[in-house]
Image 1 (cartoon, rainbow, N blue to C red):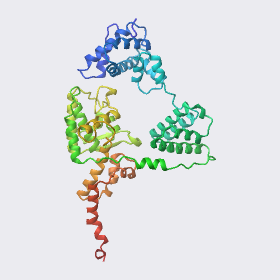
Image 2: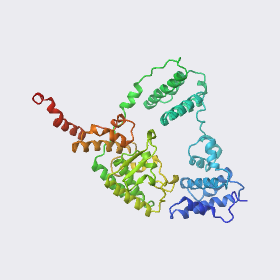
Image 3: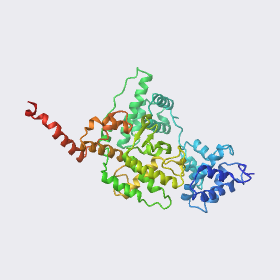
Image 4: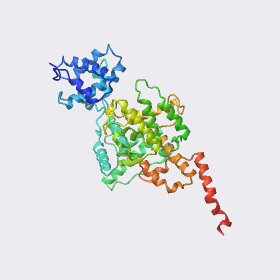
Amino acid sequence: MSAWHDPDRTIIDAFLEKSQFRPGSRPTYRWFLRSFEDVALRHPAVDRQMIEDWLGEMAPRWKLSTLLNQVCIVDRFLDYLVQNELIPGNPVAELRRQHNINQNKPIWRALASPNPDEALADLHRPASYGSVLGDFMRDHVALMRNRGYQYETQAHWLLRFDRFLQAHPELAGEPLETMLTHWAAAKPTRNHAAECQKLGRILTKARHRLDPNIPPKRFNPRPEREVAREHRRPHIFSPADIRHMLEVARSYPSPHAPLRPETLYTMILLAYCAGLRRSEIARLDLGDVDLRSGTITIRETKFYKTRILPLSGSVMVELRAYLDTRRRAGAPQGPQSGLFWQSHFRGHHTPETVTTMITNVMRRAGFKPPSGRTGPRVHDLRHSMVVNRILQWYRIGINPQDRLHFLSTYLGHRDINSTLVYITVTQDLLQEASERFRAVGAPCLNGEALS
């Protein structure tokens, strides 16, 4: 009996049609899913054993790396079967939940290994907030988020500390200060030392809130100062640099993804001209672009802000050209489809993928070495937008101080102090500021002008 009822074998075709994959990809995906269905026909249920048998049959035909790159289509197909109540659950997703893994691919890799039980055991991660301080830290995160804070970075710190405590049960009866001391000694890096200081302040403040009789504790600010001293200065791209990068993006070699060059070109254009963060680029939908008004809508980003950004006429011309190319490439035209569409991850690129794609352009353009983390970052495009905008204001006679609050709103900042972080003093900016002082401020220092 088949694992799901499909006597006419039409479910795979219906899934491929609904998923709106590129026409050229469908034959490969259909063949891949048919092989999965052939194995399912010999099993009463879609379970771990059935998946291991299928992987065993596929292993002689495909390299493991290639096979693991294709299993995402099976994941989506299993979710489709669950949504249509054809199977009770996705066994891979269930294994991921059992072992507290965030992604499915490590589960597939473990199931394809010679010893799946041992590989799954190595993947297992402790439950979130399962330590002796777990409830206390979980409640604190919930409180801060209820107050309106996103609290993502702090939650990651707390989860890392929670996993450390679970791995060291001997610290369960020790005071908080002792736990933090052992946590600080776990890694010798300066970043970890600074993170421990911040984590200590968070936990002591939370404890003081619950019991005001516990005195607050002073922490050594030196680790954070050392990290700040080593913080990498942003690279400020000149307009000529941006033009060169756009030329490289438009000529990017991509024979298997013809939309890729235009996608890279438009991503870099919006990252620089609109000062978008990588996460904002990744989340853009087709419906966020308003060609009539010449605006794009950035929804629910950092600090839960939504903003509507006007774009210049030249940027809108390029955006229209990209939308035409996107339509001709067969991308879905629904308002909820990703502006930078691709066939995986529900039609959207992840922020990490956006970083990788733009970084590859920077490497080809010669701004970064062929490998490694040195050189400009994607976020430096946002820094460059701020500095070059202020330079332009100086050159056309506008006082930047009168416009900074507009720039702060455009960037989605809470206040002007966040925008000031982006003002990197370059030689050109210093020269323009000096010229403005010479023309406007210097006469005020002349005694004759005052008399």
